[in-house]
Amino acid sequence: MHALTLPANGHYDEMLLQSGAIRPHYQPFASWLHAQTPEALAKKRAEADLLFHKVGITFAVYGDEAGAERLIPFDTVPRIVPSSEWQMLEAGLRQRVTALNRFLWDIYHEHEIIKAGLMPAEQVFANAQYQPAMQGLDLPHGIYAHITGVDLIRHSDGGYYVLEDNLRVPSGVSYMLENRKMMMRLFPELFARYQVAPVAHYPTLLLNTLRHASTADNPTVVVLTPGPFNSAYFEHAFLAQQMGVELVEGQDLFVKDDYLYMRTTVGPQRVDVIYRRIDDAFLDPLAFRADSMLGVPGLLSVYKRGNVILANAIGTGVADDKSIYPYVPDMIRFYLGEEPILHNVPTWQCRKPEDLDHVLTHMADLVVKEVHGAGGYGMLVGPASTAAEVADFRERVRANPSNYIAQPTLCLSSCPTFVDSGIAPRHIDLRPFVLSGREISMVAGGLTRVALKQGSLVVNSSQGGGTKDTWILEGQA
Image (tube, rainbow, N blue to C red; front, top):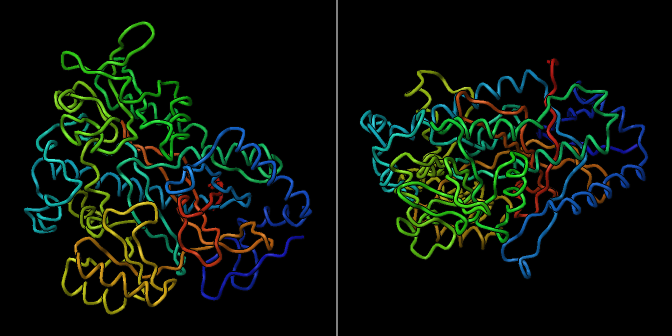
């Protein structure tokens, strides 16, 4: 029997109550675990590592020696969520992504939310992610973010909170799919004990979403990748293969007579939809960064004529900027006339003098982030930092306040995880993937990321985090 380490006092653990009792939805798993020997489980984990290596599920870490590729550590204790919780999360995600798409349409058209005084104009128009080229451009169905990854955490009060919205090129869905395949292969007997909602149909939902984005009768869809040196290249190739569409680089595409074409062995083929995994700045060297070798010269003009769809649309980054995040609850009320189902984490905006004073005074207790930051970089976790690190970061914030926001150090929920010493609680988050097409759709669950270092709150794979399979139970409260 594996002894389960109790969560720290005041922490919310997904499996264990503070007393050590097992939460009801984890009891079948706990009884199964009780019957396993440490040796058998260690063997299964080694088998998982070997299989992931064979499939090539790696993540390139920039700055590593020679761009070394690593496995994202996979943990074999699943994160299990009752169906009633998922129903609430799903409703909240639908509401949030609907409002974000409405906001994007508005800021590139009528500016109603700014006219209503709910958001300062400079927050939008001076934002580095705002693209003037999109102003007044009508997109089919008014959809800007076809694929959204919303990062959720559960706090010590047991409630879920949205940590951030990812509307540019959210990644990680391939790990969600491969983690499920791995668990079913290694532990088929566990799936006999649980009715777990499937995730394998995600590529079909994604392809349907991309096809719906176009007004063409039988649209040709491609996945545009920066190439094999990108950290998420495995995912680009995986999704193209799963959807049965071509994986292309910028050099495989060209513009002619206001249409976009792909070079093929049987001649040019017109392209109607690009699922792009390249940032705005690199898409078209004639319109954005002139030194980009990754994009397609003339792509923007084809896009503005409505002859190709980009998923996600150019300029969606405004809505996932951390300085815009505090306004999402207001967007939901303004555009939908509803109260937010999912709550934001309280956020101080350092561009506001009174917020800046608070942050500078209490920095040692806060998490401070760059508004455009991603991947766990450019941030300070106050309680885990030295006095010198806090002092250094304080000067950075003081020098450029509008570049930073701050949040309380939330206690992310934990989940039992295999570590060197046995099974111990480690902090987790959850990234569901929300697809906006003819309707909003998502598979039940998402990618659970886990901070493998004891006490760490940084779950990003680029910072040494791992992943778990996420089980949404069907038909169970």
